[in-house]
Length: 587
Image (cartoon, rainbow, N blue to C red):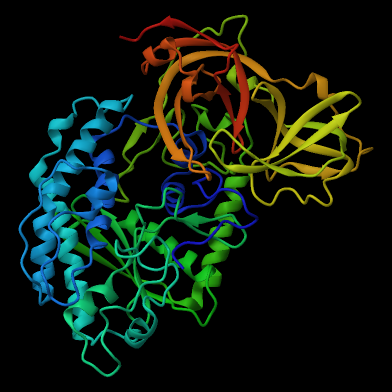
């Protein structure tokens, strides 16, 4: 089960407050770096390899989804992945009849040049649209011939896997494949079948026959992220606090092998980050399956630049309970971090006992990325600034948060699409003639049966959505008695807008597809005013010319921004009444 639905319903996109393989790697190396990258969401400038890696993985998956004719006849001469992408700019190649795995290799290898050209052209488009690029890097860093070699490395590794399957006479699941097609759920994606649908048994031999080359290719095909499915293909912990998105899972043996694809070099280097990340996937697999389901006994990293396979021994099932306890403690430490707590950036260092304490870095520096555990690679994540906050602006550290409100919910909880195209549960809270929408931003916070009638709510975050006052509920929001002794705020006085100012320290762009198939795009800046950092987000057409002209280092004011929240973090969204003022350019 490399994919399942998140518990409690709701969306399956990556969340900053959900433990993942990459967030675990970051936390274990430096909790402060985790805070910067994962919770606050600060990004660095984009390197060409960061864009290329995602495009390469899609192309590799598209190639491995190909199926040759089972009768040994001549296969088609054009990549079905390119057809799926709508790329008609490549001629068909000549092909020969296939009667072996070597023939599959030769056929698929002949499709790689067109695939590589497609990847390269997509890279150039993505690079042009990237708002913040790494200085000194450019599109000339990415060579077409290297892309071909990288895709070829993946093909070579999968052909070797198919050969092992052939040498094992199809493996222990051979007869199931012959009788019912792919016995695993979800099925391994292939172009010959619709997404998620069971495979046909056409082409498979009858029981008792020796496995042939075609069966070995089909049986050994791994589960991969299907490029035809626009939504996230993640596996979620039953309790909702952890999730991960695997690259490849080989399931043809008795036990599965989880594979993570890396676009770079792998030979001769320690891989502590890979081992931690893929070890997390192994634990997540254990947590989402019954004891009689297929287990995992091996983990691998596939490095496409040199074709290196980094093999890792999977932890045994016997210590999974201990691993759960360890990861739960990390999750609890992450949850202890309070919003708008900026004590951890003190020049004297993060206080001992604080969840973000790191003995190696302090102030405006964090531990950077390195494959060498001894090399902390200390780097600055925020500049030292002498910035005077304008009189009409809020200090970022003083943005309002965590209010207590009370009223009555007389109607039912219903579903609504949020800014990210996700279905979330909402209800109307009423006090007298004042009404406000309350939104469950994390799955499982609200029990619709008890969150009804006259209620009190503590630790709700205030804001605005679609021009109306809004309250955002997360795991820290609690249901209390209507007449509880709390510092209540009247619904009509809930803050919905804020004016903030600061220096632009990060830029980024995200895009996705909603549950109903509607694409969404968000462009964002992060600004720093010396007291804190906040994300400035523009959805769809709300980007103004001033917003588009901003670069890292510029100073700006956001007037009357719409106060919102993204998984426990304040976010200022641009709305109709929002205006931007460009104070100073760094260029």
